[in-house]
Length: 245
Image 1 (cartoon, rainbow, N blue to C red):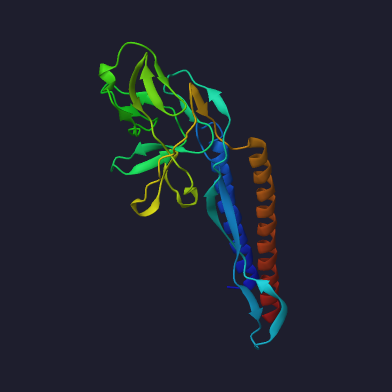
Image 2: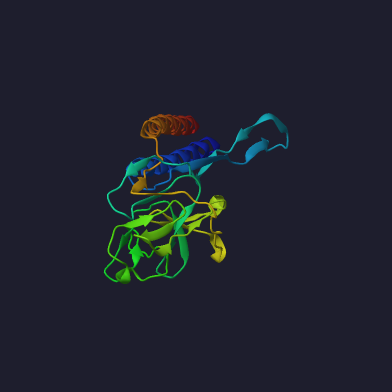
């Protein structure tokens, strides 16, 4: 393929990928516990040697590639919840979730509810990692309280605790959908010793809508410019072919 066409094509693919990631961020601006995704751009191999073997002064980039980068795990703002098990983590840490295959996943979405069987579940229906010393259906009457350390009590009775896991391996997290991540190769995060849980609060998405919209506009303009370069290169090649004929 012609070098100019190849470079423009790589630019279009990279920018389209960035648009998809930015659009997904904007779509989840109101999703509880959502963490913004970033895009990494890489310059492709530079063509520094001519066909005659001469070294070019500056070289010619072969284009660009984009991939989804790490999640932005900065703290989202806390909003009031209306359930005793609407929980938010202030600072470091993640809740543990058991996937259908019993693998331990992690999330910042703390919108939890007990089902009829007394199992604490997240909004996706997966069980929350929780240590109950007294089964839910045997709890005394009263409103449950969750301390900042994760201890669950009803009245003066301690009925269990919710462990919080360290997020110092966040760069290795793999997304599995529904605001849930896992660590590779069966790895598990260590339990955090001094968590800070806020009961009756939820953590909102950390997407800054104004920044995301501005980024989308800039990316769309760059995409349009790349498309025009591709069109111009194609028209030039057509003219050259006409001269040859």
